[in-house]
Image (cartoon, rainbow, N blue to C red; front, side):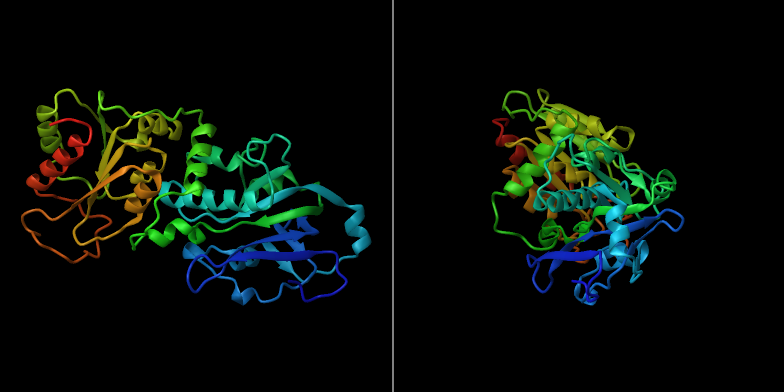
Length: 371
């Protein structure tokens, strides 16, 4: 995909047309020289047809990464390149929302899909790979260990850190990878539409790898010990009257264990331990419900949906994971019958009819032999 001839650098993209009307791509550069003084890679050829490559939310995508981390069309002598060739692979990642579980896991997943396609072996210590974050986010998300699955355990670095480490080590890299962006992840396809898909090896492989990374055992669900985990949101989208409603459930099902957890106070490994022991996960629709990806087969999620919101993401994940899915549509007395989605749904607290909450729980508990 380079228009310049007889140069040392090569630039190639691999695309796939899973999403209608768009071809998602990752790209590989060979023979790019890193200049630590500018924190940029020099590419001595001009990539063709960059305008045809898609961009995504939060200014991600191959064209944005190239624009922000490369100087294009800086010719060098091929002999100089060969003499200063360095091994290893650098992966350039522009993150969306570090700390948001949904966005972060989908972009990690897209990175894994890229590395699998390129033939890298997961958990191999021999991989000479370094992940570099090229965004402006200072925060390192609590799931940073997931970026090390293909890097032999090496932690990801921010571009500033990477440049400081390599200021005296200029040279050409064997390979620079710009992976699939989080926004290209096929799971986004099912965010607003119900998918007729009931099994996915991609989902299973991703879930198994995450659990293996944090050494969490996937436990079997039994009818004897029902453990209910309620995700307690402290900031926005809080669940109105949650203590009263959960107390009613505890009174009706005294043999069930009910845990109210705030995942913001726990490490990601601790969160996964909780999820692996959960029979029923309940919470207001949001990033925390992404944990449904890691729930054991036979478990159930109850998705409390803000008024008017009709998101299908976690319902589709439940189908792919062979776990139960129930939705309670928010409304409350003042919004009874509301079909609109409030512009402030992401911050508004959510209220449900008590009868809807109780009847949904009765249906769920019957699946575990509880009446």
